[in-house]
Length: 298
Image (tube, rainbow, N blue to C red; front, side, top):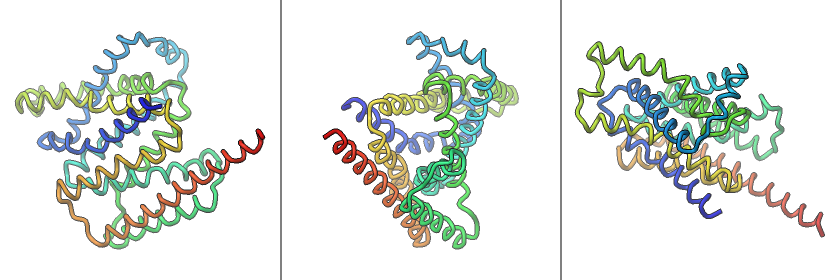
């Protein structure tokens, strides 16, 4: 349990401070960073798979087109999510990006209703309504939807839904996604190199090293999360998941001095209130179920 908790906290801490890493690559376009992230993530994952000798899942993929198409869809969602996040960080929208990941748990619940026909309790509906009011308020005050937040929330929620029902585990699944994306990514990078437009190799050894390091920066928190999720209670994970967007939010305001007006504060308060209600409801229901189980065994 202790190792699982440390791994989970480590994963969310790394996700929380990732804006610092992406900011160090601010001179490189978001699209090029994304391509390197795909290529070097696969390189790191192949080393890991070789060390652990975990290749049996490839036969499972070859025998099932359904698995392949499922992970093609998840890979595309991951691509859009990664690009949006890198773009947001390097263009001064870290606070809005954090809003997307605050909204994400509530959006997961909503997708469960419409796609998995799950039933919500009253407090869950109340939480979603308050969060929705916050988004609507921000939209009217700014004159446009908070697109970055919504794209991040929707893509990550849909990605999580696909991975929840996927036939492969965390390591194998991420490896397959990177295999699917590798050829397009490396082809575009080679084209940029031939056209003299690539930053890798021309911006100095520091940028080269950081671009290569995108593979480890991507896969390490995912592997820590997968390790922790198997050993920590779901209710605990539900609380720990707020570490990452909270750190991102604080970095955006206090380290990178992004604008945080009263309008934004009101919108965020709506979302935070919704999350408190949602978390309280989950903890209360789990406590009631545990008490019922105890009474049933007496």
